[in-house]
Image (cartoon, rainbow, N blue to C red; front, side, top):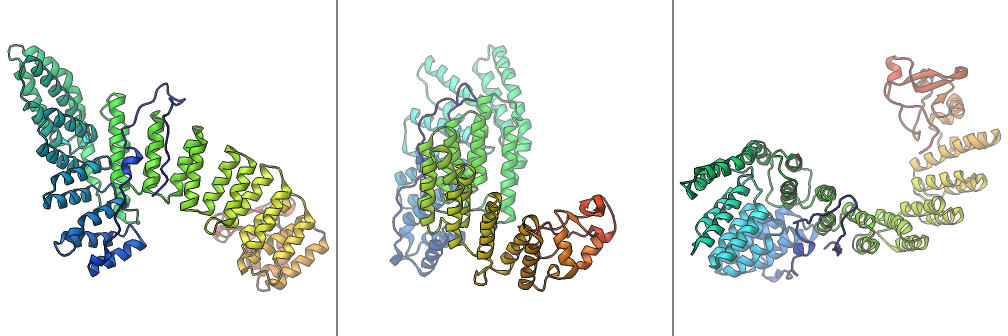
Length: 607
């Protein structure tokens, strides 16, 4: 599982005088109970094969289909349906379809109470109409208390009453209210009040058959007091604009909702075009709801947008981008609790997502919750260590705690098999140099890194840049010599980059004899390169940045630029004659076809 960070009660955020409470489920509601170990000895051969595949990759959709099929087939694995569905729903807790199948398994065994409990567990994670309607049906069949049933209907319309397909739930709710028996005028007035509230809420939802509900509502209002039609007309006139706005929004909403195709499993993104279309469709629908096409009140708008986000996340729970966008929306609404809770749920669903964990840690740090932010980093270090994680943990420790804290994180990173790389050494060294103003410690870290990563060209170039910034020419030359030794183990590309840097270093700091010497040594190491011989070598010596001592045609004949150069010339960039006859590449000039080639002259042999 991921890191579940307990978020204490929030004060009102600075950007708002008061905060709103999110109706999104808490992290605890997403955590499944302990799952039984698989009874492999009772598995069929196909089920064992599927289990092996799931052990290797828990989101193997085809393997899960096989496993579910085995317990649904009515064969020797039928009695294991609880075990299989509990395992599946720990991996896919927002799969409403499989919660329904799980409940149906209990119903088939005559265990209606157990089925109801399964459905109740599913509701916080799956704001889906089919799930709620099934739950209500089983709840009503097992309860006779009218008030209890009314409260469950209230929960249902609060949870999924904004869905375009919620018309069936609203109809059932209204029919239930109309069927409540009353004993006196007070109870009759209460029922009328509840019915009117239900109608008014329902008629503001852009849902299927909303016009039918409008006609029913008109008839109901007029039937209450036939002797006072003016009152009914007034109430209808007050409600009609909101209904018309819902009806107008319905067409666009239906078009967008119909375009969203949901898969059998809410799995991770695999690059499939249908998955891309689903993400695009949900984003369009969310943007549509956020635009407030019905011009509803702020609180109603917030509920509708939040519902859309929660429903989207039930179908796309393994997409970090959606979690982050939802969290940002909560922040815009001034809902600090919802902002943090959304990211907490996201890291629970995606325990290996460094992106979401870092975003959560940043949010907590921004709110001054340093211990909770540190807990996020610690949890990831234990479960999913990586070089980038340790780099950001060091940066967090330095800014939120102390220099010593950041150094301690670096020490831990060095001992981590999965959490250490040359980038960790480089980041730690440059932080000592730039933030702590301690070049001595920085150099010691680079030297320690060089012992482990002496064949990593990128690390060596970073170290050389650091030494150059110190103007420590002698030690810079020592490092050049050390890493370019015959037994250094560098590959050709890294070796050439470093030789180019060595040559550039001597061009800018050495005397002519040193320049000629290092040119000869590079030529001996790379005799096949144009710049190792004759005029190409001289042209390379005399160029600076984009300034060259000859035109583009000559450079082409000399074979410049070459492997290991800084990069390609911008398209259509011809030579420009600089001061004193020098040719500057990349400016206005010749438009000849030959001059529009994409290669760029050597910018100094740097990285």
